[in-house]
Length: 333
Image (cartoon, rainbow, N blue to C red; front, side):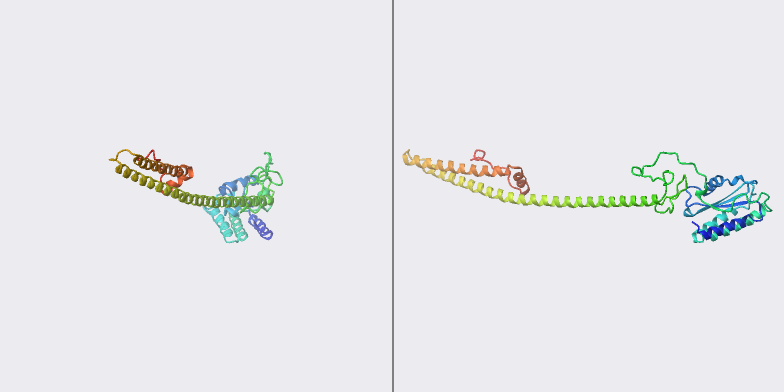
């Protein structure tokens, strides 16, 4: 987060800030601050042991550049400064990071801190330089060893630290180091694995969407083909039913015709005496009616067989054709 040259400049600024006063100054930098910056700064202050100076006059400048926050914590041995002074220091550092002048802002802020310390705790430090002049990071904080269960990266969504095996918590899109919270070791491997895992998940999601689209296309094609087949079949069945219906109508007309002729024969021979000729004419007329009715029944049965099938019945309903042709014994003949 600071280049080697910039870190050297900050270390020299720390030494300058401690000159002519009894305070100890420390700068701590970590990538992100998960919560309140001042609360985190107090944790770091305690973890680094800054409260153990002889007069408790240490000052910590805490900076979390990716979170764009900073804070200042001072020991009880530093008298109350004028209101808002530490906030001015914080704003100066934050503005420097926003303007891509982090090192310059920290050096300038340390200069102002040194000026204040010379006012409130000025004089020679009888105890000497109690703390080394340094920029600390999370790797410098004391850590408890990880004692939890091992992380199985093949089964778990977590990644294991390459040094201590602890589960890692980091953002692969923004974190540049993936530092372990337990041992502070950098884990670039975990970042690479997470990027690959996310890439696989995106690829799998694209494949799933593509499969759904393809299935939708095939479903549409199959449905269209089925509908076309039904339409084609119904058209063919309609033609068959219409032809059979025409046969029924012609047979019906023929029955009507011979029945009319039968009535004429009966009328003509109604007043004549019985004779062989009369009986022959009447029997012939009756026989013709019987033959044509049988032919009509055959035509009606052929129609009913087709219209009574499942597909024939469907076609008859679709095209508005009769579902049944009456037989001669069902008609009022």
